[in-house]
Image (cartoon, rainbow, N blue to C red):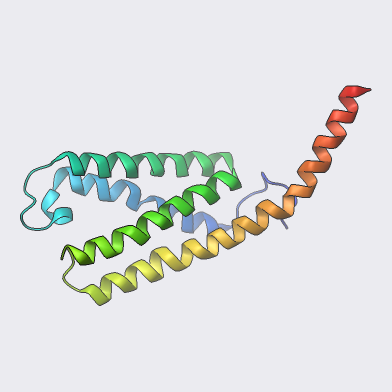
Length: 149
């Protein structure tokens, strides 16, 4: 199941990665075109915070796409972890600054669409990475023996 680190990713993980990646582009576009939607009613102008938010999200989004194309499970693991940590900070920030009208709905969305799927993906990728580690080690040993001879 996990023997080849470059083996095709399961469909459910591909769908999850798409759902994890889309907000990394949609959110910044909204922040740069309609700042009041992201920064509350008084945020009528685009400021440095919007650009920092956009740059952070675009960078992680592009890196997620690259990791997915390369089928690099370690990189996907790290980027999904970064995305999860970011969301764990974003949710309380949104609530603290009163940027959401329906707190229960927003918490439900974050938990069901971001937190739980990210934890499942991290668990799968962790197992996948560690299950293929002995194969990589054995392969590297065989390669070094071949080079020496």
